[in-house]
Length: 375
Image (cartoon, rainbow, N blue to C red; front, side):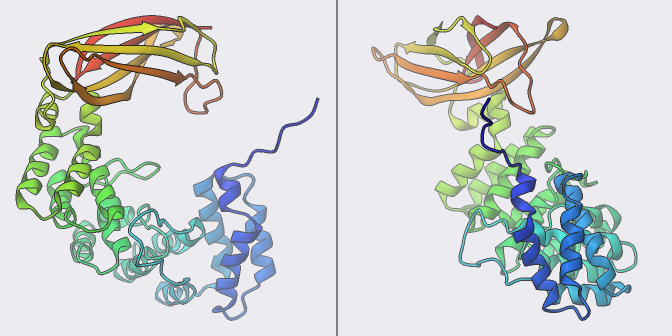
């Protein structure tokens, strides 16, 4: 049987002979006695048996023998080897290269306890090459007063990567990251200074931060959004984008105040039907269905659907998906056809055979549902 093309993970693409060679070149140009070939051989040898984040710890470990043992001197060496700053003329999607997380690893490992101020200086410099959102968090927890003072200062920094770090590094539920011991009362004043930023990289982080808070304190988020809109610090279009992005979890759950703020009445006078075109779906194929919404007058509607995935033992797991934002007009039904791919090879969610459910909600209220079988 012929073999398919090889597959590559994110780790393979991020960490390889070329990227580690670039990192080795940077240190070879600045560190006296640096063994480029030895560093490259050691760092590459540790990749296969480690996770992506563990690889970064390993690269730092491979570099340590060539660095000074006292942290202030080490920090000077790390800063000297940093590549040029990320392009300051860009406004979004310029995350940097993962290989440049190494200074953050070492700032935590060697600077957290004895040299927090110097370590924060290093993080400030390093985040302009690669986001230090994972590495600022230990300082937030260990030295909250010192670190929050820095973050308040950085909220006005001239480099947008530094400003983004203020929001991203303090997010309550940052993916992959350790928890931070901060309350919304401590972080929302930072966002007050950032929500009017002219860079989408920053405002997206602010919206994601609010979405994290919305999962446990919705009113705090909605109050802030209303206050920011009234302040006029951000242009109306960008504020509207931020608002929807920050509210996305609340919208999915049909949070009443959220939908009211967006102009979607929960008691909207519409009729909803759903037609399942594929009542039996094989794993890997698509669930095809059509939703029809009719009304006697013009009304705005936000239409989502939930799939009730069957789990062993008669349990369910539900996931919400966006379908349509539009307007229903008298005599003109809104008809939406959708094919939802039921992935058979997803690594994070396993499909199980059996009866599943499809629920259609309009403006946060369940309106109709149907059943289909996964085989």
